[in-house]
Amino acid sequence: MSQNKTKGYLAVATIDSFFYKSALNLFETIKDFDPEAKVCLATEKSFLDGREKEICDYVIDAPNHVRGKMQAMANTPFDQTFYIDADTDCEHEDILTVFDLFEDNDIVWTALDEKRRYCFVEVLFPAGELYLCGGVCLYDTTKPLVREFMQDWYDLYVKQNSGAWWPTNEKGEFDFENYPQSLKRWDQFTLWWLVNKEPKYASLKHGVFENDARWNYYSKYHDHLDHNNGQPIVIRHYSDGNVKTSV
Image 1: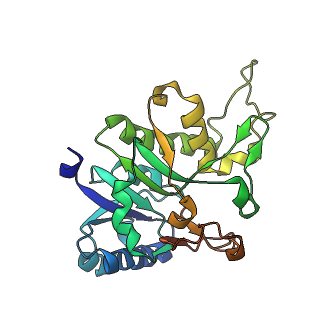
Image 2: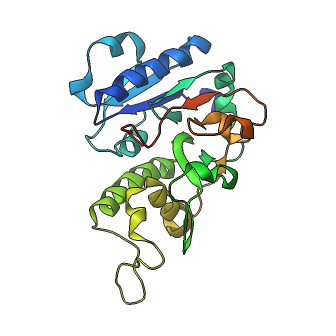
């Protein structure tokens, strides 16, 4: 049945036109290896300059929000989607294998692995640790709960970031002791909450790519530490703390 599912790539460009240009470049690098690849750009209409008509199979609206990507992920036109942050390049032909990597999972992520923790601003907190990373994500929306997950990820993050929602303690007060307020900025925390604390999604199967660093090779990784285990990098991620980012 999986052979009949539609498959494609999604990137999102919001807030800054830089991400529109980056997303188009990303799609071109994917098509260098897979000329038949189907790609969808989610963006703000004000960024469109005509180039998307030559490159994209689908163009959909994305909200003008720093984490608009999650709503766009919920609105993917594909049955199986490989979401990729816009500020990336595809560097290797193994991109052709990505839709074979679900194994028994509904959603596949990369990780904030302990060995790479030196790159991440905030991972550990009293009630747990952030582990799943949203920089790339392989997911199958033929299971309706997966699409709902992506939409709830966006909706809850908006409430989290605005201060309208936060985990509470036994007194019904926001629990900043176990969940420090500094976590409010991270969509990874919203992701952690939905995966670990939301009963609605207990049945979803989440996985991490084998040798996951090569699927989201962060620009601050130290090459000499060989996080990709000697294997070619597939997706190189240029995001860092000194540039604007849509993730």
